[in-house]
Length: 65
Image (cartoon, rainbow, N blue to C red):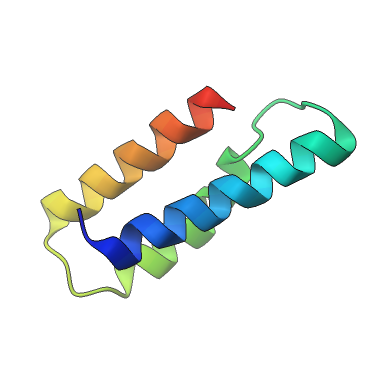
């Protein structure tokens, strides 16, 4: 997986975890960052399948919150 793409996802997940710790759990926590993550990953020079793998990684990390 592209390191820059993984860093984008990890940053969004860290933000969601920090929000959970401050305000408590809420539905769709982390998933509200999906569009921003998708747009940032879309700007990277990656194949479509790689982008899909990154978004699958994002979804799996959101599920863990």
